[in-house]
Amino acid sequence: MTERSGANAGRHGETEGARRRTPAGKPTPRVRMSAGQRREQLIAIARQLFAERGFDATSIEEVAARARVSKPVVYEHFGGKEGLYAVVVDREVRALLDRIATALTAGHPRELLEQAATALLGYIEEETSGFRVLVRESPVMSAAGSFSSVMNDVAHRVEHILGAEFSARGYDPKLAELYSQALVGMVALAGRWWLEVREPGKETVAAHLVNLAWNGLSHLEATPGLIAVRGE
Image (cartoon, rainbow, N blue to C red; front, side):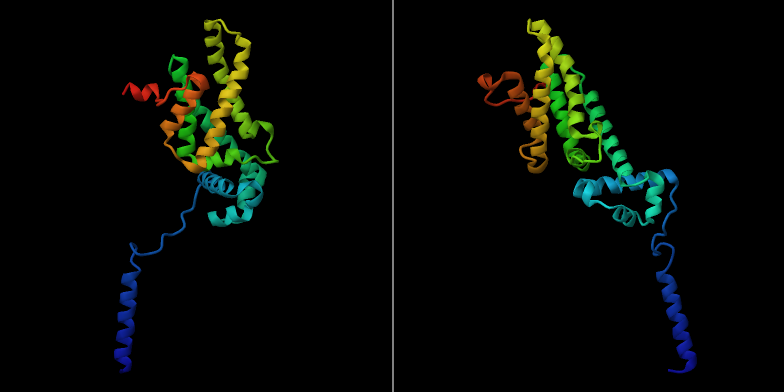
């Protein structure tokens, strides 16, 4: 090959290379994020890691590595792993409580129980990582940030429902707190079990939970269903 033909080949290779490196084929450049966008990215990454490994096994180094930033960036936003974890947990607590509060729209107590159970199971189904974060108790969190505290809040909402029903039926309304804790505890524990097995389906699990809560063991329905589903 002559020097001229080699040069031509070189230019041809450069042309082909340039074609392969057209704007459409270039690697996507790193987009510079605003402070708010970076914060949201770090929260999302941390949420997934805390769900997978728990607080102790998650490190700031890995959060930073997945976000492709330096550790000081994470510290700048959250002050440390404890601060980042607290933000993640607080968001999940509010998301779960808002979902349950929004679901409680019916007037009949049984339908309210159905809605509460279905809302919790729906959160587990759709926000699995968030639920895993909540059920992994961490020693660095105060009682206000634990899963049990979230369930206590839900139980207090159910207590008002049961209290009114107890009064209407001539029962002692002071017992509403006991019953609400028992009901919410039953649904929460069943939810943690269902998180792993995912069988039977959400509506079936909710129907059986309400069946037990509403009818009691001595009056269980053979094939329970949700009132809302029956009416469709």
